[in-house]
Length: 629
Image 1 (cartoon, rainbow, N blue to C red):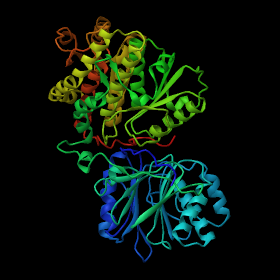
Image 2 (cartoon, rainbow, N blue to C red):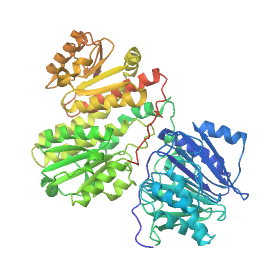
Image 3 (cartoon, one colour):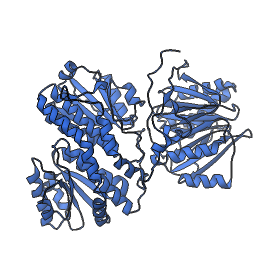
Image 4 (cartoon, rainbow, N blue to C red):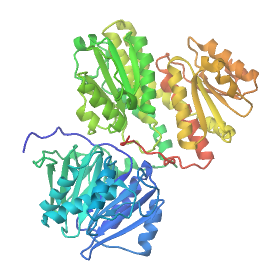
């Protein structure tokens, strides 16, 4: 066996869901339990396939896992080997026929798939010419037929024969995949493979599991192997074999999952999102843990794998991410330029990979992703490294592809985030941005005394976050007051402008209300046309250098009878005289205000969505992390 991979701890992953099982127990209850644990990802249909000695039996349903469970209850299936799936539609409408699992032409092979087969139309046309017929519109069924054809042509009904058929088929595929495959003629074997869509092998005693997310199987095992791209695994009840698409054996290391099934439960909270909002005093503290150096009045980020002399040579930084991660990058731009005086540019990861962005050799690139598997961000990472730039990752998954392929980075240590709308991962990203700005600032312009003051403020940060959470009832009352509004405007200045964008995104994601974020000063440059009595404006208005400017903007909205909600600093009496509703946060330096202002805005969005009866943890059309373009 070639050199073992580093021992890592697996965290949460992504959209769609795969759960597979082979062992001595009844497979269906395990598969359904795993699918329920993946419900947060966002999906539109689900299905189960069981190999039971009589053939392969499939049950599917459009809708929730509860609908699939009802189908199985009315028409039970039994067996000790099976695969299951939650589908998030990419190719084909949301129908029973398009739901996974899918059969091959023989009806003896069944497959589940996460990802996108980009050349499926070409492959489908070739298969049709060879006599294949299809029952769905999906790219997945094409892959099932391709593997089944390769298996039938080889005539090898062993485990090795099924693995070889998978290998032959995948060599013809362009795109991304995480798959589970079962064949009637190879009883006792479950085959999985991945490229660009995560897959985890769960190791048990006399049983093994396959999943797209370790949270699906953590109730049964905490020993896991995280597959790399282009790897294929063959699972049996008594063991497994791991190989590459090229045909060679692959090394692996069994990793201990650091959290339990209880960690991915809601506990006393009605929704994961609320639970994760309230975990932020802990997650912010964990993001800081071991990274503050009072002796040197700086931050310690050893994972960057860069000496101070190398960091000092950096003349430009590019921060890249998608969605919430991009908003954290925007805050990072303000912080790093302010504290370290290094030019920073923010790039959408989805655009960076297609741009010919001029970057000199002294440019340092950071890619930011909670899951570490976001397709666009991973592509940006690879493009940056291809062009010779040192590229670092900021992510929450120490076993993710971004973590493995980057030149170094910083882990968030936020723990599993189940809610689709990012909350605690965002504030962890912001905390890391402060640490990075401090580190870069101390090797350049910040004095020892200034560094110590920043450390003192960071140490007090978790307590200030906890204090804001004590105002939940007040924030919930304000949310209920405005819950029926059809539009919202969010405004902030400097580093709080990205927080306005993030607040608008949170509200859109979970309540489906049209919300927009703007720099406050842009109000008079067109945005003011949207102000009316039915449209609340939310201003982030801390006591900072642009406080008076923000007050002036609030007055402009009030003059046009627009309702105003203000996020202000404790002790501020002026806001209550102008704004209709005020939420106060603890006094803090400008570089920490974005973190503190985020907390009440998360609660505000959450309570509006809850008041409207929205499915907070599983918002429509959204998935936890996007692994396809």
